[in-house]
Image 1: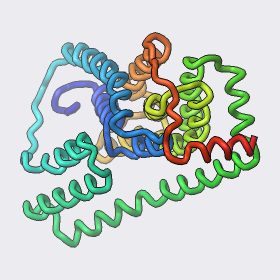
Image 2 (image 1 turned 90 degrees about the vertical axis):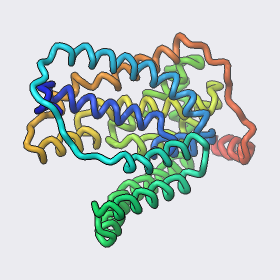
Image 3 (image 1 turned 90 degrees about the horizontal axis):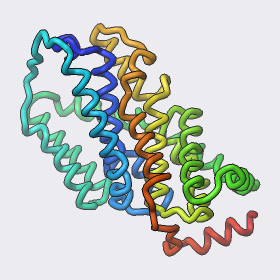
Length: 309
């Protein structure tokens, strides 16, 4: 698109990355959504409602800014690619299934099955190659899975030795009140994302501490999950060594274009506007929902934390 239209390559790459992050924010089946909701014990649809209010204004402002920047460009060509609308079916199945609240694994399996049938029927991929691609995809998740397991083990050790209590006490000294607690929660997951360069792992690491912060600062579960998701996205989006940035640069290199992370970063409008929108909803938009202690196993968790303290 950049070569055909004359638009700046960093602008095009930044726009694609921003769109991907927006989709990740509002997806019912993204790994960040699952990690945040499972860790905080809230429904995905509730977290979606919280994220939608924050992400939509950021996306609209981003679109307006991109449109304003692109209007001044001289379009020198067009892009022609073959497509078939039936290939949208797997995406629609996943989207509708997620909105309806169907189990995430069922939704993903339906999407994979329908997509496999379509591409094999079209002759785009052989059945044997399809199985190989699935194996490659599963292997690609192995490292993330192992990191998540190790992080969970480390968090258990920290909790057992009073680390969470000490960390929470330090946070309480710095951040006061519910709004301060929400900001502290966002900065906590952001710091972990900077350290790990993986927003899903950062959420998994921050979940236990954020859970206790939510109780201490009287923050609702859906709000906590939303903060973890949005702030991890903000930091993941702007660090030059994040997976999204590296994949984008690698894709450009494969097509014969050279672009650096520092050239792209000024055009990552969505993460910056998402941060601004998040701060507005923390400090300026009232949230009357408090912490909900009525989920299964909550009493046992409280007793366990009290005994450790």
